[in-house]
Image 1 (cartoon, rainbow, N blue to C red):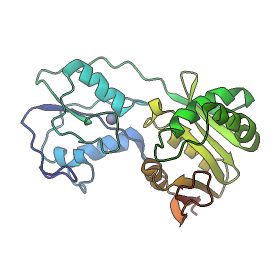
Image 2: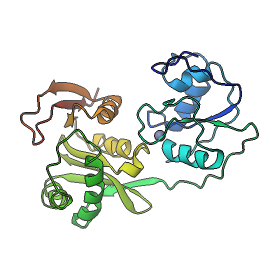
Image 3: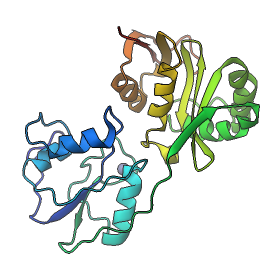
Image 4: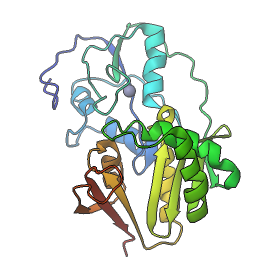
Length: 262
Ligand SMILES: [Zn+2]
């Protein structure tokens, strides 16, 4: 089976579990419908497999996370990824998002995942927001380390919460993502590393778009490919590229703009 960037992996006949997420328009319903449709342009790794495989069962987990699911399955059936990298090009955590499972495989019990909620932040939220910002910002390991965690906290409390409209996403009462906006400018949008891929940032961005602005703009580091894919997926277009001379980290960045259409 030819699969983009994975060569021509071969799979033994058998049972496999694939874990994916659906943060695009239409959510789980649209994504699962696509997986079940035969006539489509093959785009994802799973599309190539589904061209040759039969779907026995589907399990949808609203608010779930594909990597948590892989870990949960691996704990039950072993971390048996026949094609390393399959479905996990963006993932640093899993060997693959496809696992081989025994033919008599039964789904592990899936506790319901709590939904995400959102609300406006207040001054009392500075510590919780900083606890999202610091570890998330440090995932950008191509940047020089310029600030301590204490400085991050002061920046959130004294600058961001003073100057910006800040929305937070919560999971079971804990802040897991936030979006800080000053008019049309998105100053910060960060998700805690443990909660990436659950749709929190998409939810906050939708709220920002729905706030009545005609356009949104932001700076993103050019090397932050995950964020760039996210913004481009959500309708942002790159309008300028810099060499980084004007930012604190002296790291090339890209200016993105979204405009309300119609
Ligand atoms: Zn993963």
